[in-house]
Length: 334
Image (cartoon, rainbow, N blue to C red; front, side, top):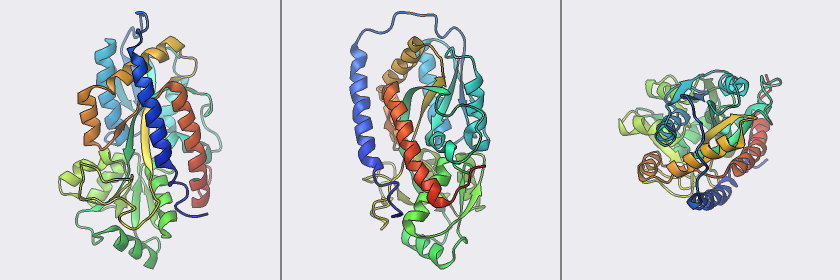
């Protein structure tokens, strides 16, 4: 198949989804739900990745916002391993009372193509709440890397297949599939080194254990600002304010390639609709606050806030998209 095909349609779809989110935020002017007893105690947000990745960073900021709005602590717990399925399974087994939530990202849509037997019902285990953020993807190398730009890296990967290594958050993680889609678009072959989370993959790039990684901007920005990492390209239609000198993949010569990551919160299936609605309204309102918008801007991320039903459609669309990438990459179910 054309190697840039899986990623190219994402940006138009994102604009539609963001438009839907904007309409939803307008609806918040309606009277709020009647007071309820939720939450009656601290709420757990399970992040199924190691600390430091984009999903973790955004979930922690959202937890603070939800605590402020709903009057109880929202505590983030990292349950990394097995491509996010360990944390997801724990939340799927939890009581559906809104007291245990899952920070979900793109990776969830890939799980049916990675595992023969999941420890939960992939199609029906969770009730979507909303997306917290959409984030562009970077291709990063160590600051001392010999690869000064994207064309030089692609040329080297073509000359010596499997010599250039890339780190990921595990087989099937967003970092892994982003790099697989990149290889397909570039006509090159890289060597995959999986870690337990995106943060670990970025740190491995800083230490020189691997040559490159493709995380969300939020995961790599600190290393870039600290002079430890060099960005070669960023996804999206335009350059971002946080990295004005970093070209888009289009500008760097890889036409039509763009992948946008997302993360959000879901609850166990069966969670009462009033609880879902209360969480959705609190999240959507938080995403309009100036300090939250400023925080997301530092990550070059767009706010989410789409209604739960739209979030559910997004997950289904992503499943179709990544099925093609997984198939072309020859990823076998475990």
